[in-house]
Length: 252
Image 1 (tube, rainbow, N blue to C red):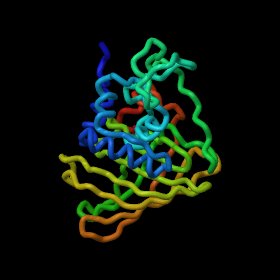
Image 2 (cartoon, one colour; image 1 turned 90 degrees about the vertical axis):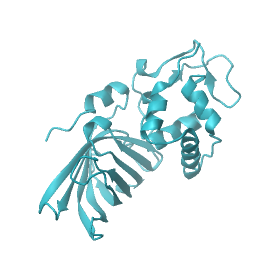
Image 3 (cartoon, one colour; image 1 turned 30 degrees about the vertical axis):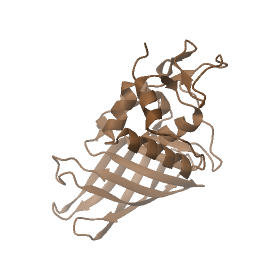
Image 4 (tube, rainbow, N blue to C red; image 1 turned 180 degrees about the vertical axis):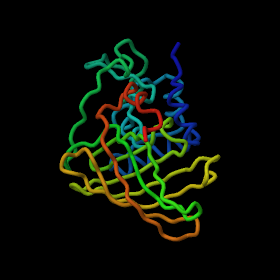
């Protein structure tokens, strides 16, 4: 009897997505990346029920983009080299003794993108903003997981690092990083669960260990605000152990 993938189901539900919504998001991610896929509700059900323990690479990349988490953190197993023939005919591997839990594998280096160094890893995100209501400047900090696929960066905050989830979708062009950001503020915080979003542009320092630039976005009074934003590299690993180490509020 197969074990359900409770991790993937929890991630999906935490994103407030139905299985249909999740499948649609995976198809959209593949389409944007130029690698279309045929994800549907039935496939999501098979992943979550544990019938499929290893998605094929096309789906694995789309899952990472949609969730902002490495495939090793989504409850799947990784196939050992040269497994025996078998599967569902779609390139997915069914339950088999030739697979081992992904958390038991070492963190493997990721291939470098055509645009330069690969930025995947755990980073510290820090931005400043002015609050007219509180008449002061404040700082927002999160530990975030950065995943790179080609020239695209998917950035998601670790849930324990802040009660205001943060996401960024970025594109790398040499040492210039451009994209959008979204933050869902805490329901019991000053901004009462308000959702803020805007644009961001960063420059990657020559060391590749820091990105710094500016954000822009609308305020509560529909005025355009801006401020500094930086991402500071912490470590390259995105396995479960690494994420557990940073799943806490950053030290001021």
